[in-house]
Image (tube, rainbow, N blue to C red):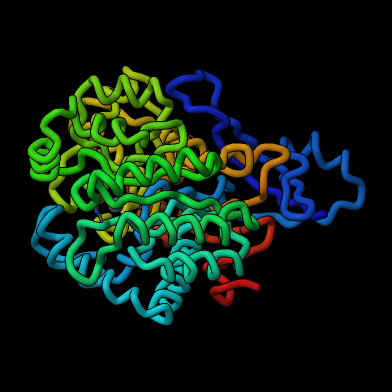
Length: 431
Ligand code: GUN
Ligand code: ZN
């Protein structure tokens, strides 16, 4: 058993739904036993309950490990690819990069680099796209399992994809089922049925994704929704009878409480009502939406309808793996449509909000007693300008400045199950 003493901040609910959602201990203590939080609170209250406890003082703001609700590990090396909006960007930059994942050795190399980057950025859990190749998911889960990370991933279903990057409805089902058997529920791993988006799967494959979801009640559904206007026009042309883009997925049984839809930038109210009714979630990816010229997420609309949301980096379209950076971008996207994203709510989206989308909220995201001890130590003086801006500032101002000015530099340490997995000021990858 070990104690971690420091300033501790987390949210136990969405502050847009519950007023007293912030949990803050200015001088707090987190007690961890076998990777789990057994106690958390004010140091003066908690410490006397554990006589002889070895306590490490942590210098910085302790928050839950970030949870990236939508990211593509095979696109890591295509971040910052110039010149196109979504559909042309996929053709020119992304599909060629994903073809390289036919080679399992390449997949293993990139999976390792991706996890190193996640931990450097303070992200301890994520919902991750593989590629169409089943081996890309084996590589990812192998690397993830070795580090005991809580992660969700799936093989991409795309029988209408480009040559060299497509499966068939039959192979998609067979490979997904084999991966589910091999990985789902093993250690901290979750499988996600992953049709790329409506345009790259036949009706038969979308139906088979619905059947996979129904046949395996614990798995997630992960896809893209209403990101880009040309994409939406092409979906409307192909599915003229659908009420809207979401209705396409709905007609194949894909809109459930386990569904995570990336983006949802351009949604009619009808879609929001249906998402809320089904308790399906949206992974908001603001830096990606800006980078690809897709648009700005409408936070007020989602809030009005009670749609649950989390935060995603959407690398390689996103411009940073940092969920601090993406929280800052979310604020700017929100303000574009008149919504003032509160910095505590932004922290919720990057932690408990994403955990709720990924059905991980009983395990991670809130630093609550009984949860797994995945946490980050933030340094709100990481750069000279951050130090100036946060000197003497309130907690809300420090948090907001960390979101607007911060990134991986502001992550001093990342802990996984109570073990230090990244130490910025130490030897790098800690034991
Ligand atoms: N829609 C379909 N595939 C993709 C992808 O790889 N990235 C993004 N941002 N949107 C998509
Ligand atoms: Zn994406």
